[in-house]
Image (cartoon, rainbow, N blue to C red):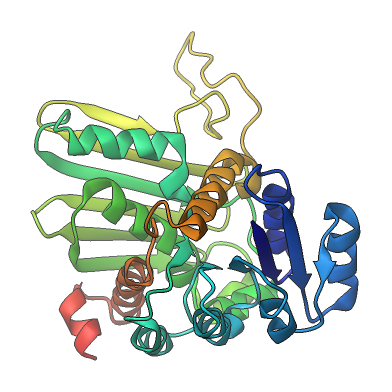
Length: 334
């Protein structure tokens, strides 16, 4: 099949490399507002260059990968759908929930599949955790802990446009909690602070946050995030039930040091970058998209899924600002 890629920044170029290695993909067509980025990708992966999204969609592509800036996502998703081309779009759907809801309304009923990029759904550990929960191996769940700790904060310009740590970072935890447990969040309580980069506080954001999510069956989920984790990139999940407890992310590259006498785990080099930690997951995610394009599977992460994670982020952002519990119903109605 022939896949188009819009946006050749860090993640777009990474996707181009991954797609170029998949057996199902015969050729790539790429476009980027920065001509040099498109040219470099074309030379590296043998891709054809289009000078605009319209030209790319007219180049006979079977599927479209959107890795452009967030502000362009709504228009590019719509363009792909209007052209009848299945779309993979990196999260988020749009800058705001109102825009995201508008995108959903515009494409609903089109029959064109759309997959949003939440790569943890394709990680082997999270997949095994979901299977264990669905099989009842843990018994009744009572506690979930989900962690995302970055080794260093992103640049000031990125932070200023990110929408805040809950919308940019924690949203991955929110999505994977829903996906692994199969439950919905009904209420949140969030707290946060700033212990590092001044520009994060200047942007009205926090660099370290925690949130307690109440799920619709009474399970408590605790989410922890920080922009400052000097030992490395730490992504983990614990699930505790009445019968058993399991964890995702406890491998030899866990960026955590035990001080227990005689304990050497973990012994490997700590994870330090999300593309390394989730390289296999990204490959599985794009392989899944080729199956969506081929019509052999439905979208594994729909716009509806992405918006649900977005609503949780909105509730946590409001909870942090007003120092109170916030229900999901409140932010949906607001």
